[in-house]
Image (cartoon, helix red, strand yellow):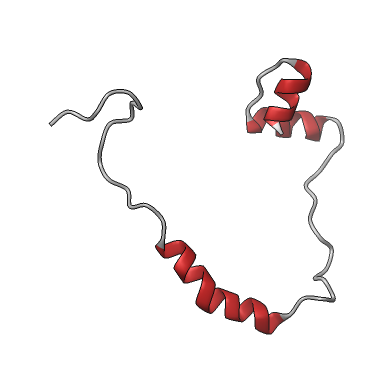
Length: 75
């Protein structure tokens, strides 16, 4: 959302700033009032059991290093 605002109005906004602007103008978070009738609980359970662990396991491990993109860490 901040990117859209930046491109349209040539401003930079943080996520918190965008949220404050939206709340100030009467907007709120979009949260469904109820679950979808098409929801398949068995499919969701199967995904959580089989697919999700593989996706979480493929994350890069955090290693100590430099926070600079151009300068390697010092020994």
